[in-house]
Amino acid sequence: MLIEKDKPAPGERLAAAGDGWRAVEVTCDAGPADRPFEEAHEDLSVSAVLDGVFAYRSGLGRALMTPGSLLLGNPGGAYRCSHEVCRGDRCLAFQFSAELVEETVADFGGLRRPVFSRPRLPPVAERAGRLHAARRLAGGKLPGLASEALALDLLGAAFSSEEGVEPAVTSRDERRIAAVLDYMHAHHDERLGLGDLAKLVGLGRHQFLRVFRRVVGQSPHAYLIGYRLARAAVALDAGSGRVIDIALDNGFSDLSEFTRRFRDAFGRPPAAYRNKAG
Image (cartoon, rainbow, N blue to C red; front, side, top):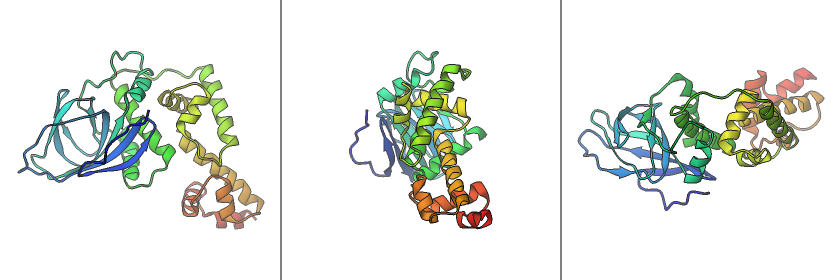
């Protein structure tokens, strides 16, 4: 279910990729004097506009794109972008395979077809965190599990705007997620993927992400980071072992990242935390 592509076109850079999705940073330097030309979306895509203001026209309609907007495109859909006032823009385009789109749309029972009916979703405060995550991904600062979750989040946000209301948590949901949490606790020091966790309970990745968030209240990545930090704090309280060893034992391969996250969570760096605990 991997999306196979040739080399990125001029102005494009592959930022991340996974099973059935890829994220491409697209930079444009066109201005008011440049004539727009017609292009086409190869795959269904959701593009986070990071910088710039431009007009987007497609078979879905016309919309002004601004930072924080989500530009929506259907497979094979022709479109034009024009910069009638401002010069240039930068987007992070998430492109999805037909199989992943079908899997995701199955979570929205009211949808008839796995396509979009509108050209964009406007900027809203609720998506500010996702836009920041997209900037981090474009800068190479978002880990794999969080990158995949962001891709599925944006795809789900686009389709949920077509459909409706989030269902309530069921006892079956709770049992499924309890089993996943048990597995995550036992393998917290390993590299975990959404696909592997979803398969444990027989769910598609997007459905798993939605159910996990409904039950736990946060994403699998956020939960895993918090669990790792809590385990590290216990080890630091015990006073044994080097900080670097404690970080590695709890799934952190980068000491600076571990120190930053620990300070954010506990108010002081690991060494200072251990000294005070002792």
